[in-house]
Length: 144
Image 1 (cartoon, one colour):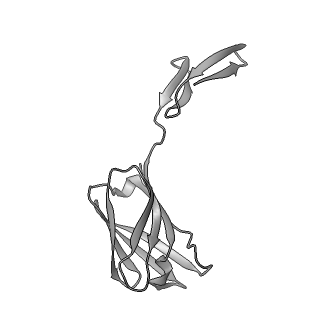
Image 2 (cartoon, helix red, strand yellow; image 1 turned 90 degrees about the horizontal axis):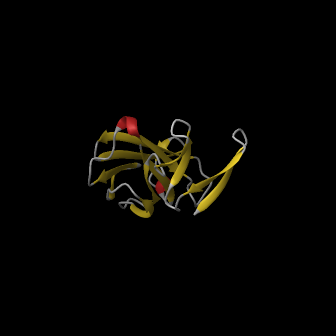
Image 3 (cartoon, one colour; image 1 turned 120 degrees about the vertical axis):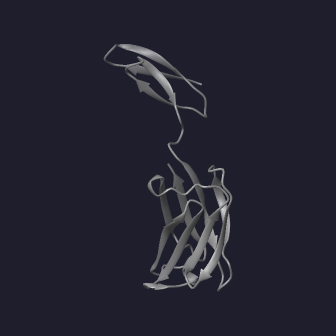
């Protein structure tokens, strides 16, 4: 793929060549366009599905982390997410848990680091630990 870019300061057109799997940025020191990594992070996106007091299941929408994840119920509103590889690093991760798809209840969630292969997930309804709060809840984990 070739994209035309007009540099108004130089008064000329430049060809930017790349593919759909490349991201490009202009590097002034190199006086041209260079390939960059597509994302600065790996991500795991999905949905927790739980009914009653059973172990939740995970519906995976996207996972380029190289890890396989499992989740088990530890107690009311407390779950353990395990990875088959060391992927959790306190200073290199970001979590979003929310968007309960069934109701507009006041649900909140926490992801707590335990070890490099284990996270604790807590779900609350109205400020109290609750199992129903995890039903059909989407999440995204990013590893930077």
